[in-house]
Each structure stands twice: as C-alpha cells, then as structure tokens.
Length: 313
Image (cartoon, rainbow, N blue to C red; front, side, top):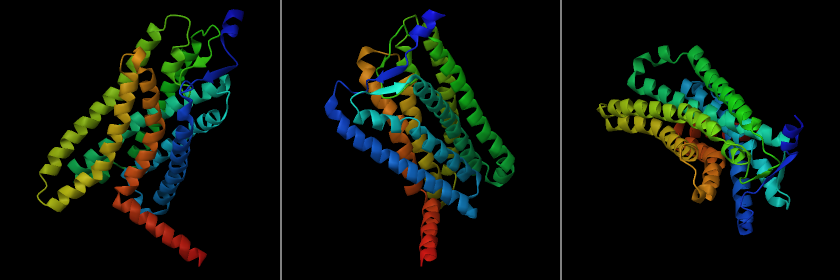
C-alpha cells in the first residue's frame, strides 16, 4: 500500500513544447484568441437559440447542446495551458490532472455521440420530411441528448479509473499540454498493453461506429437531395447539412488519427498538435461554421443585436 501511495506524485510536469521555447508566444496568442472566441461565441449561440422561438426545433436543440459542450470542453484545458505557458514551472496538481482527464474525456466522448445524433436528425428531416415532427418529437430529442451525455460521462469514469490505477513509480513528466489518456499511460512503469487494448476497443465504439452511422445517414441524404427537382431546393438541403458535415469531418478525422493509429516515436509531436486541434481549434471552428454558414442563426443574431440597441436607446 505504501508503494502504491509513493508512486502517485503530488503534481505533474506538463512538458508541452518545452524543447521548442520559441513556440510559446505564438501558442499563447493562438490559445487565448481561440478560447475568447469560443467562450463568447458559444454563449451567444446558446442565448440566441434560447430567445428565438422559431429556432426551438430539434436541429437547434442539438446545436445548443454542442455549443454548451464546446464551451466546457475548452474550459477544461485552455486556462491551465495559458497559465503554464506564462510560467517557468509548467505543473498541474494531481487533483487538477484527474479533473482535467475526466472532464476532457467525458465531453469528447459525448461529442462523438452527439454529432451522430445530429446526422440522424438531418437524415429524418430530408429523407422523411412528412414524418419529421412525429419522429423527432421533444421527448425523443431529450432522451437522445441525455443518452449522449450519460454515455460520455460513463465512459470517462471507466477510462479515467483504469488509467489512474496504473502505478507510475514516481514518474511525473507528462509529454503533453494537458492530462490525456495516451500521455498518462506512457508514464506507467508496468505493461500497458491491456489498457491500450481497452482504449482501442472503446475508441472503436465511440469513434468508428458513430462515424459509420454518420456516413450511412449522409449516403441516404445525398440520394434524397439528388431526387429534388428544383436547384433551389437542392441548394437549401445541401446548405443545411454542409455545416454539420464539415464539423463531423474535422472532429472525427483528428480524433481517429489520435486514438486509432498505432503509436510511433515520430508521432510524438504530431499527437500533441492533433490533440490541440480537436481540443481547441475544432470547437472554435464549429462556432464559425455554424454561424457563418447558417442563415437562420445569422438573422436571429442580427435581430438580437437590434433589440439590444433599441433597449439602450
């Protein structure tokens, strides 16, 4: 028991790119800009979707869930990263690392399922338009959203527990910007093959199966859209799904390359950059894609701004 206790450090050193100090200022600027834009942008989307009754539809209900998720997702890692970049001692407490690991993993798993649910919503809207309001009723939407959140957090409990049970034998230098399962497994002083197999299996469940369902949904959607006679109708249908398809490609593509590719010595820095992309850049891009490409959200935002200015006058 004493040996196990001694193997758990009081704090971890997050190495990040300490071997390339010239990257710190550009990374700090990029992280800060992305974080501010993600926080204020997603809060605005949630507010706009909540205040405008016309946007109280299944599509925008799931979008508000995604905005809340992205807001919490970036908050779980970016503030600590900004603090560490400014300090010479780039550390995080053991408790902080556990919390970061659990929250980041839970929200990432939830997003995997939520994006698949959003693609199902688009499938029903375009391929079964007359039955849309019957199929995607309020109760089902609440159940699907709740299932994605509960499944994501349940997965995080399992994976976090398995990872934190591994003895570290005093190792405390995490070769990453934040506490993530693959980086922490590398600290273990015992064989991690079983843990890596479990991580791979769960990654298949939360990445490959959802992305397969997304691809099947969009195959049916494309067939349905091509049968639409008017060019305007096809343009509107593709525009509705285009934003979601871009977000899906960015998130699943980077997550799969991180969790389902075999590790290699040359992939060390690539893995860090991939994690930064789906953990920080992707949530910011989600925001830009859904606002800049969505006419209804843009119009609702303009009406909200106009209302604010009228109140001030």
